[in-house]
Length: 434
Length: 170
Image (cartoon, rainbow over all chains, first blue to last red):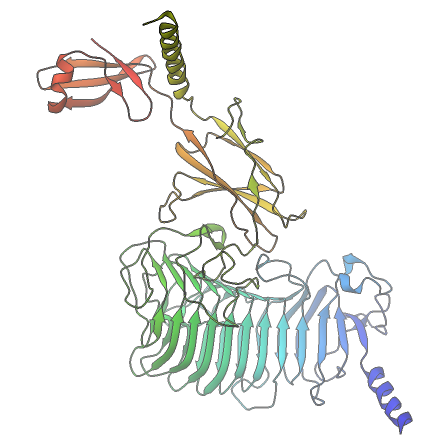
């Protein structure tokens, strides 16, 4: 019996190989001196890890049949592979590029290994996709493309106008995660999601520059034609995006359990959301158990923004500890629809009712122009929130600076500071600072 | 009054004159700020020098000037903002984490006082004040009504807005 068990363990271990690949290596894949050609479609092996070097891999479809929950992992080569024969940084100091990624089966991890996230939002991504990421049966049927993770990938749609080209198009999927990705220049929806997709997580991503026109209406996270459960959008940086809404639901769609936490949303003049930052449509749409807290929203709010529920839609949940800064005009205001809202700061705007809300003036951030949305001083104290809402995108407590910071970035998240040394600080003319 | 008392009085007057002379601080053409490293310092930590004319976080002048000082612990500013300045430093990690700010150091930077002021006209109800800008006398302000009595006595006037400047009687 023991022999059989050992044999099974050995067989399993033998199946989980690591192969080093290039676009057209042709070798065994044993190491960097024997690069294999990265497989396509159904020719991957479940349990394997494929380490890819830089180069152009074209359009890929990943549709190898599932085997329980066994993953297939595709990772960019990195310094973690330094012990492998033939290793050289010149093999991976440029991106591995795909023209599109199409998922045709479940349990995949695609990992760029470097770049992205706070401090490197737009740089260093190991993998570049110059086109859409989608499932292979968009809008047709549920043929199980669940459980996929996309890490540290740049997605450059390359649109310069509203061309109705989506960045991510998915239907009938569950458990997809995007982390530390940089998705930009999108001429349509950023995420077009329909017919039932549960447990969608987008975190530590930068999503930048989206377009729409009178005929092409874009959204950032478009939910259509089904009930979706448990979406989490946290610790992201959204910049200059257009659409009917950023977070919302179309017509008959419902998002039940929608967490929008700790994000930075920056908009230059001219970028707007027709119905609102969080919104439904006049024909319907439902957002329930919505948690909208600790977000920083900065920019031009002239066009509709805030939480909006026109027509026959409905929104319920809470909005707390958010910081909204209107940087172009004064006197503007917005509502929170039917959300319970409190402890929000609305800079340069009209009074908003609700417990703990305030309307200060100015720009409270360290360097908003450069994208540094830490605050120069701790904000008026917000209300304390419990885990997982008590930490910011850096993993630091919102109480790090003493009070409870409102907005996305905790005050003093970098710990104790330096100290000015008056003995070494002088005027050049010799007068000592007091 | 004894000789000792007279001596003390004269010395006190001289001391006051000396202190008054020191009170006119030349404009701050440059200032060097130095700081001790943050407790969590490593070679990747950079420092950001912040300064402004207000310590009120509701003010638009609340540390509204910033400059990245790199990994060093010293920074010289040339021709900084005019006014009463408050300086502080924060540390920043490569990920963008910003530390709590340092202690605050204050410094005065008022513009140089005009060399001369004069009354150009002097009626029973008003007087025009001018200041010397290089070789040219320029109009500063017209003073009227409440100052009539003072002006009629032809006393030296003191411009007290920023620095003390004696007004030269005509």
